[in-house]
Amino acid sequence: MTAFSTDDDLLAAELAFGLIDDADRHLAEQRLVEDPAFAQAHQRWQAHAAALFADPGEAPRPSTWTAIVSRLPANDITSPRSRASLRWWQTGTVAATAAALILGAVALRAPTRIFVRVPVAEAPAAPMVAVLTGAKGLVTISFDPASGRMTSVASGLDIGHHSPELWAIPRDGKPRMMGIMNSSAPGWAKVPADARAILSAGVTIAVSVEPLGGSPSGLPTGPVILSGEMVAV
Image (cartoon, rainbow, N blue to C red; front, side):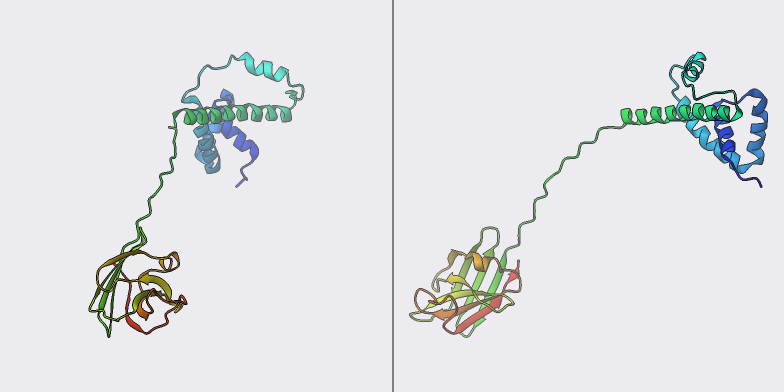
């Protein structure tokens, strides 16, 4: 089987765009039946032709080609090689026109898309609670991450002339001071930033017995009497 050549592809393009002479048309159409590669090339060029002639617009006058060729001294059409070059140039021009028309139609018909970035609000952190138990009484702690405020309620907590101080103890084991709580009535307080940053589910909350006014060192100095873990509500 003879290899499919550039001239064969040119002939298929000429047949698709109607640029072939009547004398050669019959032979070219016969090849559509006998040569699958030629038929495939013709189908490809025919698709380009269909796109062009779907909306051909105003056809150029027959003298247009002559006028263009006359202004191109390099296109000497006296030799077979030059005629082949001219055929390719004409066919390529028609194909390029088809592509331009198709792209123009798509640009005019495609709706304009405007992308607007919509901010997505982050879900607020869930409140947390902890129930502290031990040898002396019971303490319930609730914490609101949105406001940073803590509520404490003590029951049966009697440590005499001392202050019950709350501590947050993360996995690193280093206590963060949360403040002194009221052992006789519910209390509300703003959690210090250092402790607020590590408060999460699983963090241990503890109560230590400290001198009046709280730990002088920033760390627990007295015995830890109550403890429990924070859990998300």
